[in-house]
Image (tube, rainbow, N blue to C red; front, side, top):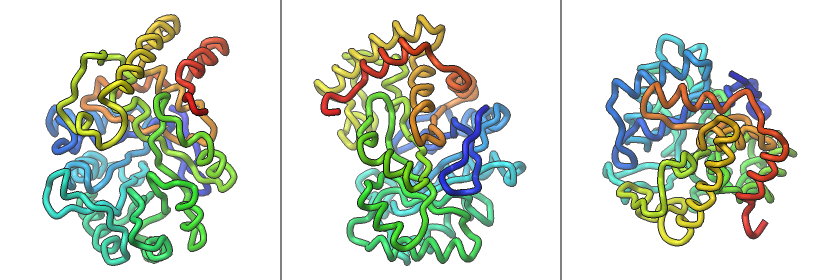
Length: 316
């Protein structure tokens, strides 16, 4: 396993991080049950992964509880990351709201600490920016938690450059967690350069584009989960069909390398400027073993150029 420093922090994180969205289960995903989920967490640790990212909204607390349970015995050897800023009145998609007020954050952190069964969080991230709450209020609450020792470092997720600039007026942030993959490259124009200049580590989520880059879907696929509801990403219509066409061409490149589509896609993200870690979600230990094969190699320059050209955004 390879490790990289996370931005300006003292955290060294594995280049593949364990993304715990999927193991939370409903309402976003279906999984294989708690036993395979717990085994996948422990397998990840055994394979050298020390970075585990979760959030309260993943299964409405279930993901955090699983992470806490699986890693309790090795708590001092891992980097636990969770989030605040998304709350719910009912356990359903439509009831999730962006709330990053001081009052909410101070309440949320206590709930996360309890579910994770720990007395500190290594990286505490604002899940989504709250347009109704000043960044100064959000950041000051996080700085107070840091001063109290309940969190070690502050990060943000899904923030743009302007929003990060507002955060930095109050205090430091060590990381940004954006969606980043061969199919989602919008951060490359402004966000990546800003993060490089300000020593903000990039944690990529959905490096496999929620499964599309694994190559297991085709143009006829219709998703019955959140991917078919237009919430995030392009999983329906003409855009989805175009993406599947690119993935089909990518399969040929992967075969020449003796790799799977998914391994090539993760490897590409790991080779991008500013990238500290790519979060990969799994359902069982076998998937974790497969994804780990994305680390420790680079494609020939000609293949890398062809891959990059295939997925270069039209507007870039």
